[in-house]
Image (cartoon, rainbow, N blue to C red; front, side):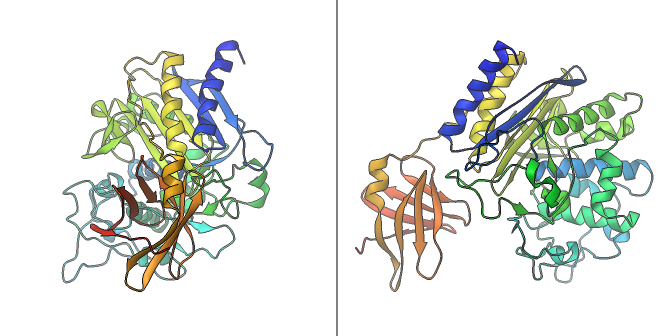
Amino acid sequence: MGVEDDVLREQIAADLERFAVPGVGWAVMSGGGIVGTGSAGLVDATGETEVSSGTLFQACSISKPVAVFAMLRLVDRGLLELDEDINRKLTSWQVPPTGSWQPVVTLRQLASHSAGLTVHGFPGYPYGELLPTTVEILDGVRPTNTFGVRVDTVPGAQFRYSGGGTVVMQRLLEDVTGTPFRELVRDLVLEPLGMADSDYAQPLPEELHGRAATAHDEQGQAIPGRWHSYPELAAAGLWTTPSDLCRFALGVQAAYAGVDGALLSPELGREMLTPQVRASDRLGGLNHVGLGAFLGDGGVRFGHSGGNEGFKCHLLADRESGFGAAVMTNGDNGMWVVQRAFAALASAYGWSGYDEPLDERHVAGEDVIDGLVGQYRLREGFGFAIDRLAGGVEVTFDGQGPMAFVSVDDSTFASSMVSARLRLRGDELVFEQNGDQIVCPRVD
């Protein structure tokens, strides 16, 4: 590692302590290959093993574009059609009717998050817990911890992110081929692209535990059991490295360019990077969805972000310049590190046109947190207690276990487990949930 690499590593590593993220790994691509890798921090906050280029991270939602790539290979082979009603090929499960109406859903809609399906994302299962089958996940029955996947908006009308829709696609690929998803994607994508450190393995086999990064919460504390398992393989189940994610991006670039030996036909490679629907903005100016990938600049930039319990990551590439990078972290505050790592990598490698503004994190001061500690009443007969916690506060509602609320700004604390916030408004503490704002007086 040269002097410039040392400076880059120190620059990225400096944010780990600031944001309570134990470790980070990255890889950089250019000119059709990987031109740099790096890492900083620890595999586990309580240990001494440093993150290396071979450390495995959960790819989280970056699992989705890899799964879509596998689907497109089956389209290329004539086994599937992008615009056919998927219920014609699904045999083990069907998109159910909504009342008396039977919606028609297509693969194009599933891959572009425009199918109108429910279930945004998945919380995973503590390691060692019983995992549901794919059909149980789709039906929302035990031991599944999410609701069933259903159509509740008009398919094709607009962007509506749905991890549930990606699991529907997973079920379709298995039904059509008769091959387990893990094996199918290994054969169609991972092995052909040289992604030797990647596997849709849930739960992670014990022989790989020594290579895997531990997941950490917003306070930088290890998740019990080290990580969650995600049986929703296509949506969130890929374990991989930053280098392997770059190999995937290189495969997408090759398909788009029509390179000899590319895994997709040029037609489908270009379809993958053609905007299908407008989406919410993501790092790198990605504001549309193609097939599997989020797109910016009309499809010139492509990538995907990801967030599982205790992991945050991002992949971004430019099909014209050839530049790109993958950054992976093992902490719930990892996107703060990811943003700054991309800015550092862009500067170090001279990426023209990368000028992404950095979000600033405004953390409540110690005096604010000290002043919050106490007992509060939410309504008659129901209240909660607030205690100190690194990076925020710990809130215990009557009859519930404690939950972490992380500091969002100088006066706001948000839960990552439920859609609730606590906000200081002058001398009042306000509980916000489901559009309601409830003033909570002190009772201690």
